[in-house]
Image (cartoon, rainbow, N blue to C red; front, top):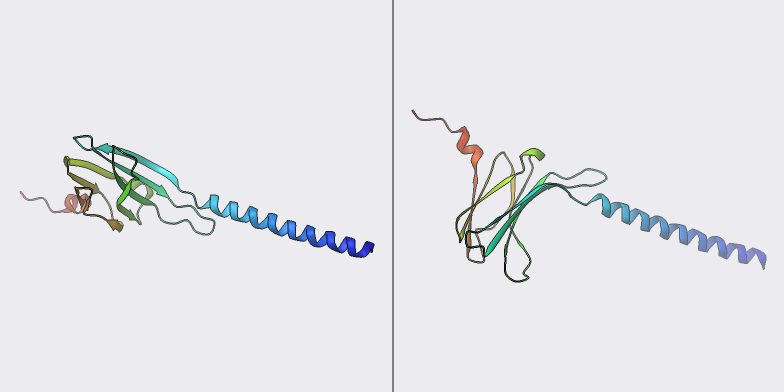
Length: 146
């Protein structure tokens, strides 16, 4: 009988260790995937009804971290609506992931960025706001006319 009792304890111990190891592994994996912000900024529309938020971050990970990513969100300032993704790009140097936000009118947001990036998502309109995007690198490299 003593042998069976010892066998049962060992089995419980092995299962407990396996569950503990899996739990630790899952926690480590999840914490390794959190993004570390590089910068963020906010810009409100001239009438104060909308707010655009831009953020850039590096994607973490154990094996290979992902490329730096920049995102712009737009939301109404009144109410409890969630911010909506309106622009995102990746693939570039971490120090070149900034997006400038310029409200041309209360219903037209212009986003500008520099460098060579992969556009992951681009909305042209959200909640009555037109969204235009320009890469200013192309403009600055154009030959100057005299």
